[in-house]
Image (tube, rainbow, N blue to C red):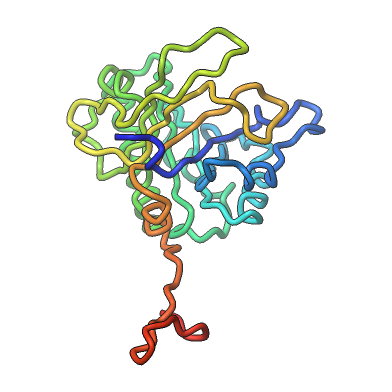
Length: 248
């Protein structure tokens, strides 16, 4: 599978803005980048009390340039799933959940048991599914999942899996890992592959590196997933040309 045939995206957090706030990501640069940045995932919060200070700005800017937006929450497996999901949804406010995929970032074990970690993730998935009507995405990597949780015990989720090439020394950039990523035990499909954590920063001078991602499909597949499929012009039955004022 060639990564060039898969829709490209990035994920960002407060670390892509300088501590003093003067060097924020330039979303116009992101909009002009090739390959096209089709989707942008932004960190909303952590556990039950932390909110990323730049989430609201990133979220608004991603909407301004017309990119598919995703929001992710870093899960603490030893804390209450209810409190954490309440916090996540409180940060998001009144957003169109059918157009903004929600992600649970699961890569911290905090010395919890496999049972506790699995239970926290599963309960978080159930809460998000029930309260938003959408099946969330679970971000992790195959090795972590196999060691710290039981994927077979989860409700239905979409998988966003990280797998990179061996990192080149700073300041070199590391090329993307070719898709598909390795799958955890018991998982048969993937939605997104995080292909690099040391890609060249796109429009964000505050950080040398940026995470790169590939969707398991084309831009049209991304838009279909979030219910934003472009309306197609009707074809006139007489001259077989598009009717410019009629759409379906």
